[in-house]
Length: 104
Image 1 (tube, helix red, strand yellow):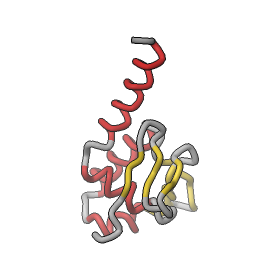
Image 2 (tube, helix red, strand yellow; image 1 turned 45 degrees about the horizontal axis):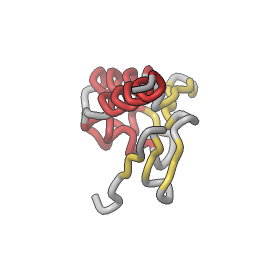
Image 3 (cartoon, helix red, strand yellow; image 1 turned 90 degrees about the horizontal axis):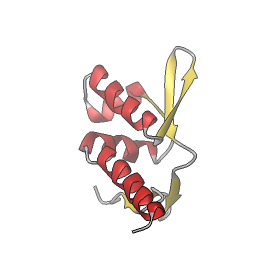
């Protein structure tokens, strides 16, 4: 097995491991429609602020989202490296596509 194939499999496995948490998937689904502040996301998710902040930190560290200071608040959005597909209802992880069902 080539080193390149192993490293791409490792890359994919790490991305999928990060997304194995349903809250992180929900955050990505919210952000697929555009940038959001923490308060906007929390109004939908109903999490403790600290728990949502933890998930956002993990998603930032793994390159899924970016954070921009917006006055006193922080605006989160999908990272530019995360491609969109399927009329904006799916994201391209580089190793596979993650599609969000619009019937939910």
